Amino acid sequence: MLTCSTLKLAGTILAATGLSITGTAYLNTRKYKLHKRTVYLPHLSSPELSAKTQLKTLSPLRILHISDPHLRAKQAHRLRFLQQLHHARPDFIILTGDLISENQAITPLITALQELAGIPGVFVYGSNDYYAPKLKNPLRYLWKNSNQDLNTPRKPNLDTPYLTRELEKLGWINLNNTRTRLTVKDWEIELVGVNDPHLQYDRYPAPTGFSTTLPDVKIGVTHSPYTRILQKFADEHCQLTFAGHTHGGQVCLPPHQALVTNCDLPTPYCAGMFSWPLQTDQAMHGNGKFIPQPTTQMAVQISKGIGTSPYTPLRLFCPPEVILNEVLPSHI
Image (cartoon, rainbow, N blue to C red; front, side):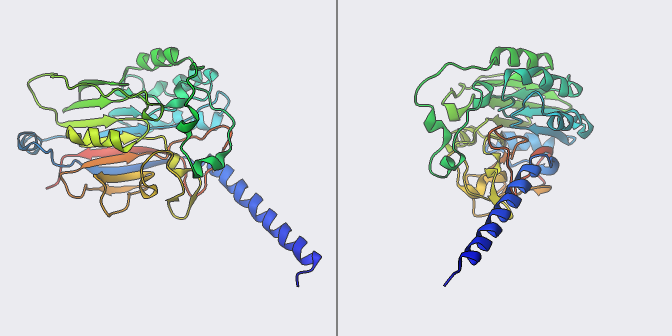
């Protein structure tokens, strides 16, 4: 029979363990990482496009993927990390949304990204580029997605037009529900983007004939990686897709076992890089070399993001990240 003193000791140990885990999870929110991946492009489904990519000699294309800062104006540690990203020497920038948590963060964000100004780039938005986060029970993510709280329409309370203007001043293209084509180094890049599917703001853009020449790479960009959007990108033969939103699960079991995704992706694919349609192989995390399997499939990268909601500043076995991809034509 357990004595009162034994129960008190057990309670003390459990409380201390809980406080230790919570403290560690809080400190992990500042352990930012720049991961580096070498990505071999999948073969394009069209033999004509595939032949072009194989025949043309292309130098490596360095794509910097930034997602989910959820920035507040006074987060000096996060701003310092963003300010140092120019040292990665990217050729191209992709931002996949949830950039801010308050209007006061727009100017500090733009200032922090100023060293990247002039480098070609694109951006799409997430829900927290329209709506400031609200205090909610974080355990609700275990049984429902957060967009189920948005059944009642409400007016956006963040200055999204101002954020858009400032990002465009840095030289970056607003890719929400649109397409673009541009040349970066010796690469002809075609991009298709959607506004946040989590808010059901996505309106998939109709195909547009940019020119008679074929792109060297076609890229899809979205904030939240809902399967219906990933499949649309795959159906039009995108080779790469970039997304964020999931925070990698944010609070995970070791080594990368997410409990939730906040969308309809299976938890093993909550973050990292993987082939689409989904295969039996696991998503690749951290640094390394990625070769799509089979090589005719689309490669999907979901960033764990940099930040969290200000009301749940915790990360466990899920460090914040920015990813630098060195993209190469298929090795086969």
